[in-house]
Image (tube, rainbow, N blue to C red; front, side, top):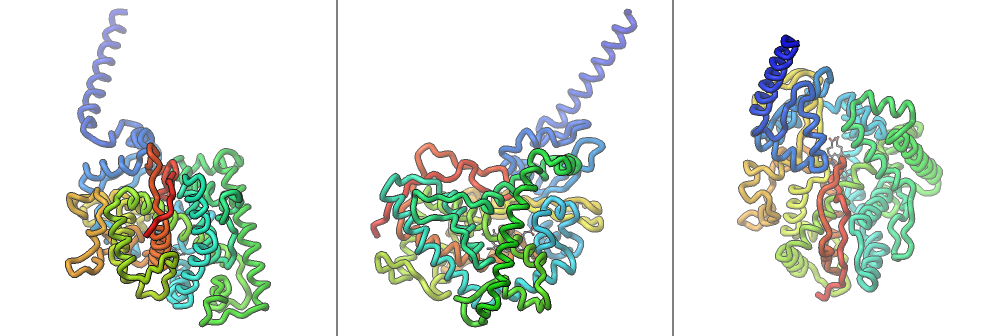
Length: 506
Ligand code: HEM
């Protein structure tokens, strides 16, 4: 009995000593690395505030650190916000970093589209889309779609809001607006999610399915691979929803692709007339397909819908929130509009590319919103062979490199001590021109050979809408409304953006 008490005391002393030692090592670390469990418990504990948490940790570790998972799991990846590392991964040693098989599985909804492909498959699609996006007819078509949607729907709706109850969720409105416009651009079909009357808000199944699919993708990032695969096999939980959403989206796309092909004989796509532009037809023509490849068109379409919907919506929300909470910035944007356009009261319509290029301050304000709140807050790539990053960190073959674009916008080393401030002036040179920041520092559109193909049309859309809305209306965030990022693969606002809308008297 006495012996067992002694053994127990010895055992307790060892446990206390080891615990004290672990506590001493971890007490100053932002992400404690626990024996057996690694860093995962503290990451999960802070998941609701994950972007700020990652930023604090990255600052603590000088911009790069390894995330250790529980023992006997293969959770081991490297996270970085170091611009030199990102220049290396996205450009200098581009050939060594692909999306990897895990990405392909997690984003299976995207099929073999450009986001989900590597090597030759990716290169083929990149060249095809690039040649399509750089045509004037495409840019003019995008402008036409946006003007039509603004004139016919968004402006009348905001007018009604300003005349009646005058409070609304701008995030919901923008989400509907961007879904309608990206479907019009990619599928030549407007699902009409955004009504022009307050009493007629329709539930469009495909739009809802898109939102739910995003949740399912986030979930797959948070649980072990075998777990969500088992759920999919059993058709339960998030995976049950994901299967149902995939079916809805597949039917939506199948119908659009078939009708586009049926209409093919009715009118021909003429190269110099944007009123007849149809991206699906242009894709068939450019790719030189002998027979229409439905899977290829489906995969391309869903990738473009995913690329151009939530990214634009997220930018709008953060931009309007930042502008409405910084009256000095709003005044300067309005002054710039007045100085550059014939603002004949109700008439906000702008034509010609040069006109938008004149708006140096507005351009800076949009870049600033994208710097502080990048729509894609995290990205990951997978190393094919082992490598050493410029920071000196080793990356083993098949290891994931995760980069936090959100954290990069909050690094003093990149943006200076005022990095947390919303300052469009940061983007303007002494000569009054927009400053070009290298893409490996301003990563909102990614960098290197896989940088965003929609950057140009995004700025066009964002500027046209910002001008139309700010010139015609004032937006005031409802008192007490809490604004913070949601936990999702796109940086949405967790509680939406409740604003009071009033008509502006210019
Ligand atoms: C503010 C708006 C946008 C932002 C912030 C943005 C951001 C990004 C980012 C971060 C990537 C890299 C994704 C990855 O490698 O996983 C990307 C790629 C891409 N984006 Fe955008 N995007 C925007 C709008 C658009 C629009 C409107 C389109 C066209 C409809 C578009 C088309 C693409 C395409 C095709 C790629 C794939 C490039 C490749 O893998 O080679 N984007 N974008």
